[in-house]
Length: 285
Image 1: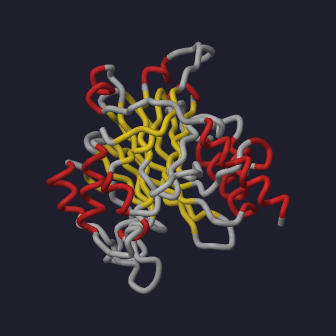
Image 2 (image 1 turned 120 degrees about the vertical axis):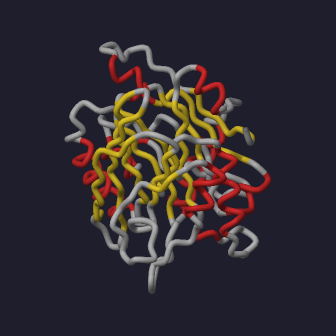
């Protein structure tokens, strides 16, 4: 037990030291030709105040100003597994449309709670992966044709058990292997705060680099642990990462959203040696 506590403390300190002041602004990213990505575990629309408020959650999603948003825990987990958000409201207010999938029920929005929202572009293929492990978990593998070029997005919510996460990471690597040269993103709540060889995300290497894009996103009121990630292949695909730390985001869920800029032009370059990534805990933009 003492050893685990020491490891946890070391992980927290490492997460804090990773923070640098960088802001992911959609306007600045668009002016550079970049695309803004976000991942948000909405905690079934229940905030840190214990209140169920889908409207509040939708407002945080609108605040993000992202072109692509991966949501986790967007459906009820049991019973009818009904969707918890008003997707039509998100279309009108945030200009985001849900990528169509086959849900668990006619009332559901997502696949094991995973929903992918898109501002513009064409969906060329969707795969719904059932991930291995003790808990029921899944991932969406979506091939997009965007104005800036093709992109594969793997949106996932990994399990609470390290052994399960290791199995799930291997399944994700297999899903990324047939991308056909498309730049690929892995985004979502990966439920892992450890770094290095002890991390279950080490199984993602070398396709994804888990040491990149590490920002503290949980718990939302005082984030210490980097549970939510945006990882790219090639590694230089992701150009900047930050948490979206607004007053509303701190109370709307127990996770803060994570935002990133990606540069699809890197998928066309042969030289990926001069990689640079800016990582921070940033304010609302």
